[in-house]
Image 1 (cartoon, one colour):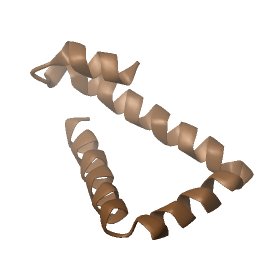
Image 2 (spheres, rainbow, N blue to C red; image 1 turned 90 degrees about the vertical axis):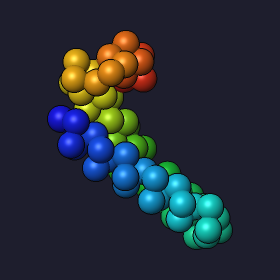
Image 3 (cartoon, rainbow, N blue to C red; image 1 turned 45 degrees about the vertical axis):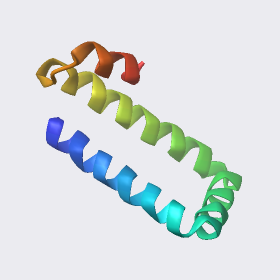
Image 4 (cartoon, helix red, strand yellow; image 1 turned 120 degrees about the horizontal axis):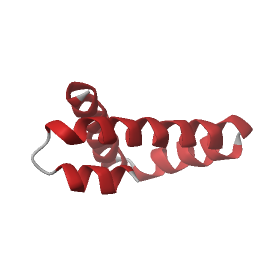
Length: 72
């Protein structure tokens, strides 16, 4: 689980860097993504995956309470 969480974190960091460099591109992608009926459900599913990864990675982390709070 910690490796999956690390991979997820890298994807988020790369996406965030892309958003800083090309804000108009990320805005158009996000707008198109959220106007599709499937987009909201996909965003919710991604959030659930992140929460599950945080929850199950908490016992092996240095700050398990923080991970569980972020997962909730």
